[in-house]
Image (cartoon, rainbow over all chains, first blue to last red; front, side):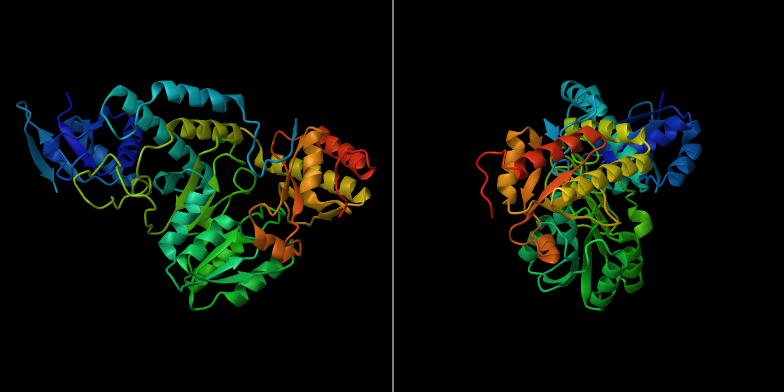
Length: 84
Length: 376
């Protein structure tokens, strides 16, 4: 189950990020970000497992895919901000 | 039909272009406008072509902006760089897609002229014209009228030294010559998708490497609560629904090109141009040829109006273009204004037989075998 959400400001960044993670074999899904983590309206998020987070961040940095925020989703469905 | 009007659009496309378009038309929804599978498919397709184009042109995927044509890209570029009264230096070979937006913006336009195929002379002329007050420089990579290749890489270096943003119109070059905006330091590089890139009409690419002002404002599928357009490229410049089937076709055209040896295609087209020019000259035509030429040959037939001659070619099943080719400046530079020229233009599918057919038709025309042509 993916419980980490990395929000991105555009679908192009989302697609670029997804490609980078796919290439590295990190399981992920690109989806429309839930309203709670998209304060400016529609956004995209890469969701992945918590244990892949550090590696994913490093990969996205290298691929110049700017992450807007990192959130953890608890089993009740609420989001807690991890970064920034 | 013998099709020799590829500078207007390449009529013959690789069959996979049409197939890709039909597939997109029947399977892709609106990218960025939903989380369902059909929207996600469209998003992946659009990004895939963006990344493919970025690899082809040596830039980042986010610098690839999809436009409807080169004209839209040039309008974005010029609208981003030029305000009323700004001095803009352009080559004297520019298309109306450059000169009309500049006129509408109220720019103070300096036109640089030099012998058509003399790259050193073009560079010297730009060197003299680019001053501290220059707001932007615009240069076509290949003249759409004469096929003259301009020294955009050296011009890019010159502009970089002087801090002047360079806009390159790669309309006739893309697909035929290396287009390398990152190496040139070009702020913007615009091109159509439907010419040398072998995609469908209604597609284009703007390679955007400088802060840009949108030409259109509207929905982007992200940051929807904001009144302003997003800052991020390419969404900033892509308001509204994208031409997904067109982009799919463009991707198929690019993939076809990536399977060809570009240098070999260029050499083949140059050989055809030489053959055409020699044959036409032997028949008494005036041909505009030179060492730095690609894809396009302009010529004049003795005593014949070029539009009427093009009509006669057309009746004989040969498609080429006559007139000013939307580039009156180029004709002013070459001394062919206002009559214009006949223009033949090639694609990777052009053959020696096409040129032979043209020469045969020309022989007939000059021998008086064509009906209804007025002698000048």
